[in-house]
Amino acid sequence: MAEHKVLIIDDEPGIRDMIKEYLLLEEYETVEAIDGVDGINQFKNQRPDMVILDVMLPKLDGWKVCREIRNISDVPIIMLTARGEEYDKLFGFELGIDDYMVKPFSPKELLARIKAIYNRRIASNNQTMQKNLVVFGEITVDLDARSAYHGGTSLSMTPKEFDLLVFFVTHPGKVFSREQLLDQVWGFDFYGDIRTVDTHVKMLRETLGTYRKCIVTAWGIGYKFQMEENT
Image: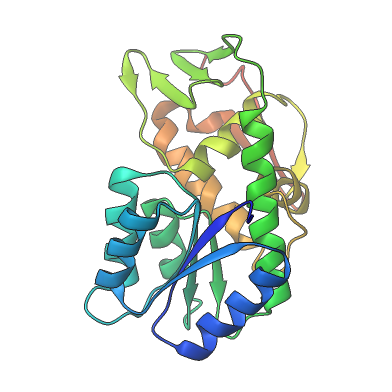
């Protein structure tokens, strides 16, 4: 019996077959959809625990499909696209995708990223249920509930933004390179554009508002979290 179910939403049969072949070798269960509308219907009917989603789809594009899924679920989403512009990546991460791959891509790399996402979810689910809060200034981060607040107002952020925030607040004062952040937060050996880290730091700083300076740039190295700033 397959341990995980992956929904592949792509209008190219060759892409679907390639992904399916590699997933079946690892004993993943697969479900396929040929367009955006079919993808949403399959998601609701099959309840997969991961989605591989193409951007350019007939009937309903991948961005709209992503929004629909995020309205009802936080399952991991890996976006596939023929474009690699930073705007597209930023837009995808703002919608709540977990990862982004540009066509043509290595199926082995895709499989590695899928495994890494699953491993991180398992680790997160195995954490203790003890109430675990980190507070700096007026910001409260509830590690167990995966939520953050500024005063009494909930902060809206993508799952990966929250993962990055948690890593920062649980490692205050220590400088991490972009490569280290990719390994620790994204959970896989990095294959793509290292600017993924910079994009998420930018998004997280905007979310933190007046506490944006808590994330300090270590020029030529990476970033560190300084709780003393603005507190």
